[in-house]
Length: 260
Ligand code: NAP
Image (cartoon, rainbow, N blue to C red; front, side, top):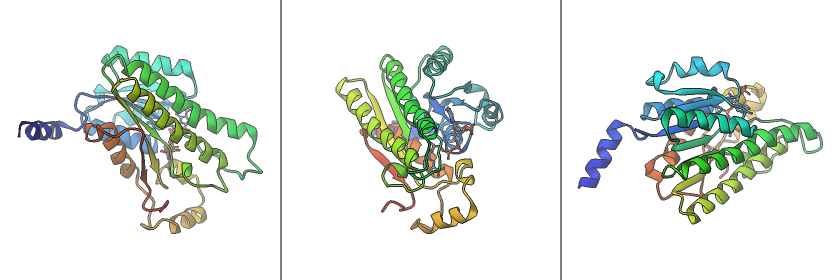
């Protein structure tokens, strides 16, 4: 009974009340939707993005705007990770949640994709997530633990004729997630790590696709529509919050049935 009461109090105050969440790529699309939802649920949010100019306008839209922190951040740069964590620790003393969301796509068949384009996708999507996990563990293990959410994609689970670099990078994120989860659990760090696999989602990333391409993609989704960014943010909230306290190393697919 006491436990139930405690749970109800926590929910009415916000599912992330008192938590500090660092979200990469938070200036746009899914990252911003996650930042907004987490702020509504009581978290103090560190919004980071390579496009730092977009962040100031975005943070003003968040609940308790003054409580959050914006940081310019290229996720493929280790010095940037060190600086962003240092700023977060200085301001809040801890980071409880890291969402490795920043990502880029590149078109081109396996025969056409250039090595330069391949490496760029790998450096943002895979190096960036690796560095995010590494620095999250280093910090969280000293402050009682936390949760890492790695934004992968359904592209990790399926062959792609048009985006081989993207799919391979996101498959790497999927496997890395399991290694991080296992390593943290075995070391007794109280850090969970899970991957989130959105299907096609209405964001600026998808807006770059042609209308014909969008129609073709939509036709392949059993639920008949693309996801909204909030659909993905709700899944990130579950993986970041205490409702998933026994969930680690898993992959949560949110795709309207696309992969089925
Ligand atoms: P988005 O609207 O393009 O947002 C991504 C954000 O990340 C942008 O603000 C972008 O800045 C930033 N970014 C790019 N390179 C970065 C870097 N090196 N360091 C830090 N930030 C960087 O994309 P989205 O659709 O929200 O995607 C978010 C995540 O979901 C990505 O990992 C993506 O792969 C994944 N995802 C998306 C879909 C979809 O259909 N939208 C489906 C599956 C998975 P710039 O705008 O300046 O580049």
